Image (cartoon, rainbow, N blue to C red; front, side, top):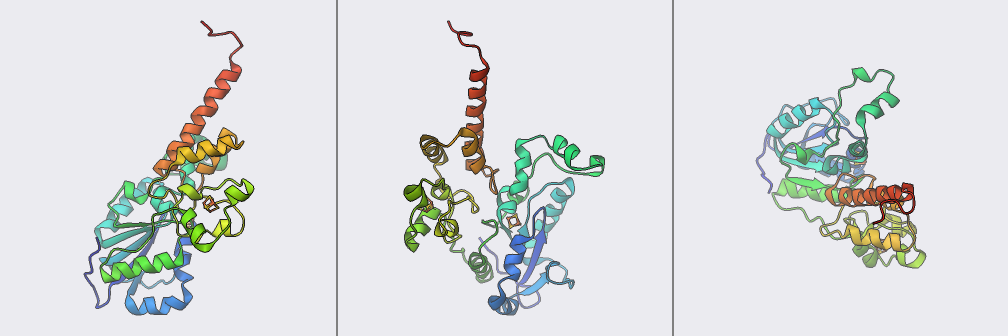
Amino acid sequence: MYTTARTHGKPTLAVWKFASCDGCQLTLLNCEDELMALADAVTIAYFPEASRSVIDGPYDVSLVEGSVTSPEEIERIGEIREISRTLITIGACATSGGIQALRNFGDVAEFRSVVYAHPEYLSTLARATPISAHVSVDFELRGCPIDKNQLLEVLAAAIQGRKPRIPTYSVCVECKRRGVVCVAVADGTPCLGPVTQAGCGALCPTYARGCYGCFGPQDTPNTSSLADRLLAVGMAHKDVMRIYRTFNAASEPFRRESERQERSLMEMSVKAATPQGEGAP
Ligand code: SF4
Ligand code: SF4
């Protein structure tokens, strides 16, 4: 999957930002203990969040944070792909559209008119999309934000020309490995862990909270079965819809399930608005 062609002696690293909060880039800066070793292993050639110094491309490895939300960004990601030997997307924004993809379920023109005094100055797309919707991506690193150790593993793999060891099983496996009491079983707390990819170390369940799905869908997510279980223990359709509509709302399995819940909600409201006896044979 990875190429190991080098420029300037060491592999060059570029870090790019699209629509995002910068949290995933900060994960790289927060590496602290490992940052010097990383700087020894690669030439950090383009990373505006860390340095104004720039080395021209092409680059061996590009990390891309953020989703595509404007026409200019479609053009820009194409240019970045052309000058990147290996392109890795980092975080929920880049891999599934992020929290800004909630716009995909609404009317962007209406949002713009409510939020901005002069929406006519804005150039924005109706949908926020992941980087992979526009260019080929060599690896997608999940999380909101990404996990530091997973990032270092992906970078090491890219430098060494091997496949990264990133698990695709669920958060439940992390709970079992760490001996965390299951909040869903013990307290009836709604938890997206069964359908969410591991990577956070079961952070929320460790603190007696349900998983919010930051790392997106695991490799075989049974989202409808989990939704049916949540409904069976008393959760409303609108709340089940909402727990699937957060950081990874536009990822295919979560989107499909939230739309199924939305349809159920609409059917229930139509039924409630229909006078009794009307439509009966
Ligand atoms: S994935 Fe989360 S932490 Fe990373 S840039 Fe997007 S909103 Fe920020
Ligand atoms: S707390 Fe959540 S993630 Fe952990 S085992 Fe229970 S359902 Fe799975």
